[in-house]
Amino acid sequence: MNSEKAGKVYLVGGGCGNPEFLTIRGKKLLSRCDTVVYDALVNPALLAYAPENCERIYVGKRAANHALPQDEINALLVRLAKEGKDVVRLKGGDPYVFGRGGEEGVALHKAGIAFEEVPGITSVIGGLAYAGIPITHRDCASSFQVVTGHLKNDAAHLDWKVLAATKGTLVFLMGMKNIEKITKSLIENGMDPKTPAAVVREASTPRQETVVGELENIAEKAAHLSAPALIVIGKVVGLREDLRFFDNRPFFGKRFVVTRSRAQASKLVEKIEEEGGATVMYPTIRIQPVDSEMERLKKAIGHIGDYSHLILTSVNGVALFFEALADCRKDARALAGLTVTAIGKATAGALKKHGVTPDIVPKQFVGEALVDALAPELSPSDRILMPRSKNARAYVMEALSKICEVDEIKIYETLREDRTDVDVPALLKAHEVDYITFTSSTTARYFAEKIGPDCAALMKESGAKCASIGPKTSEQLKKLGLPVDIQAKTYTIDGLVEAIKEDCINAH
Ligand code: SAH
Image 1 (cartoon, rainbow, N blue to C red):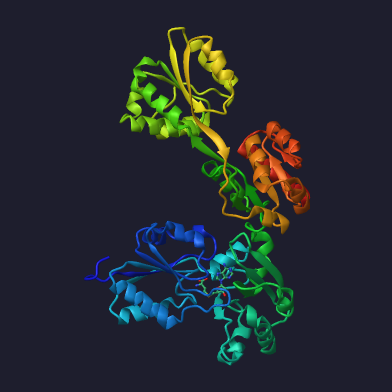
Image 2: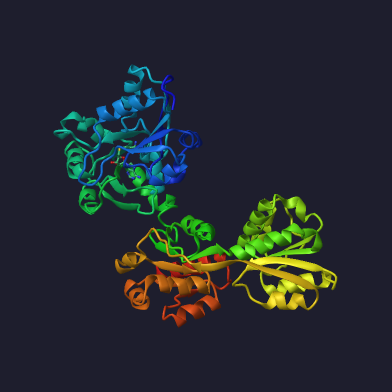
């Protein structure tokens, strides 16, 4: 904060709905601002780009509560800037499309505050696109009009004759309360009642819903849809069936509970979301380093030159090994004389991030393959350092110990994660979960423990399906009295997602 020099205000369009619509410029400004002032239409996920100590001020409407009046928002922006703060004023869609960005810009200009506008993807164009409706098309609309449906006292201030006569596309924003009045006025002023029309609610989010009809019946057909929604009228609506790409994906409208640990869930979450699904993180396991074993590892690192081989069998193992290395004030160079083996692709990838390319990576991701790949390289004079999980199978240790000395150090264990942000039992009760993914038998066991003694009954009542990554996990689910509705054919994350996709398609 600098009270002598005023800050700058950035009017940033956050895009409509999908958090990936934020521009690179917007993200850059957000990541270095002092204060962010945002309203209801902004996807809260965008706030994660702001620095942790950045002040976050909400000025939108909350249930039963009114939004901050516009002149107070203007005054707030001026005051914050005068305090020396750089402010991002974050808005849904584009700031200058019914966003009052212009009013705020003028107020800033009058107060002598520097500002900049960052355009955003407006719902008018981007939102319709996600419903498969192009705002123009050479064959049927060579112009468009964007109209406010927030009709102040009556509909008199709009020129309905001109609107009704248009051959282009009409888009009404903020129009759901007045949809009947809007459609009636257009028909009364001569527009063909059979003109194609649609309403798109919460465009580009997992909650998107689109209703298609005609001018004369769209008000009735879409009566159940609440704001924020777009009303679109014109022939372009007819292109939707050809241009749909978003709300026809296999997982669209489905909710998934992901039971993996927070650290490991991202790949699965991304794949589900890529196919259109919504995800709820419900981590059931967490990785806990074992302090005494970490101390042992550090001792071993102290004389790392005595080892000829290092074996790493998990991404967690790699992370903790390099933590211990750093605590010993060493880095990757300490491994110069060692042959490094990684159990599989993910572990090899984690090693590469630390600048180490493993010498040996077995083709299959199992202990047997690791022993087969490594054993021919070993002689009795070798010495192996193998930091890994307490829960790992004994096989690798037993097989390699027959050839040479192996120091197995059990640096971490897998424990039940009890913290959670989401009330999954409540979601289950409300029938709001479609699939629960299980990627190991441990996640299955701890899921049942977390939900509690009535887990099996609750699952049955909920209608949620259990999707298992492979036979070991399925066996555990059955033991717990949980259904195995889906089992992956190949026992990987990709295989799991494929199997669920098949189930979705069959259910249609
Ligand atoms: N500046 C915004 C519009 C603000 S006015 C923009 O450029 O999109 C608020 C109106 O925008 C809502 O009432 C609704 O009509 C529309 N709107 C905004 N986001 C939307 C979304 N994701 N889906 C449907 N309509 C949306």
